[in-house]
Length: 421
Image (cartoon, rainbow, N blue to C red; front, side, top):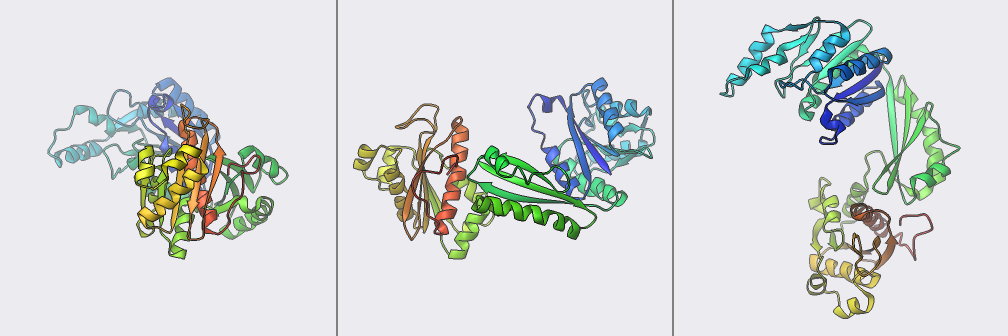
């Protein structure tokens, strides 16, 4: 069973709204073992929507349309669906009564425009929406199945879980889609692609590269009629990738670097703190976004001003004069100071010149230091991109250096050529 998704909304094309629904639908289809081959976005225009629906119907067994089911003039998915399938719109008095009761239960008078939500193509079913007033529409054409669902994310996700995914998995041939994610850090996407060129495949199993904030995910996907068979398809490719990349692979599937750092801290009984200048608290934010962080995270000192570095973290003023604020001696003093002030076992510090204007060193020059009960070390890196990219890459790099330091895998000198850290 092949599924295609059409997201409706001019706001998606203009970038005013991020299409998070695509990820929600894609992940649920994959979990259900459903083949998802195409996804598109179309603006609020009847002709273009009709063309998109007909194209999807020509190459997919199931079409899921999101958005355009509200009560306003630009909500025209119902009309486009009716035209694309050659069916007139009909009115459901039963659903109209439900709408009136919904509004009355909230002590409000229903605008007449909401009655548009009781319209649907002839022969279709209205599926109850537990999170809002717009029902989903299911139109079974025999050889094609079409769903239209609201684009409001909580409503969409509720309808996926309540109606669409159970319905589709019951109808579909039972098939498992297994995704194995190997998380890597330290090499660029292009270098990884070159290293794995002879292993790469777009068949079954397939390989794909996903780049995010200096980490590269390698997704291995296998399709089979059982989980055991899918695992057997993935296993040789996964073993080959791991052998080729070695310690560049740091995690699997949902094992984020934040989770790995937390697990290390809890296993060792250590607490962690941060001292941040250029990243301004981004590192602490990444760590504390992990559920359970209160069990090991001591706190953070955002030492943007030189005075705070000296008076709070105890960095000697003479050191700043001699080496500059963007330097390894200052970064190590910041980490040692944070460990003392926060009373933590591990302290991660960041100082640097993130831009757009240079501070002490060229833009992109960032220094990360890590203090553990064993020792304190720092590394200077030169990162590409604008201010936000430099800050994001530095935050990710700091977590990875902390992982290595906590494992006792201390680094020496500058990063190898081509490596981030």
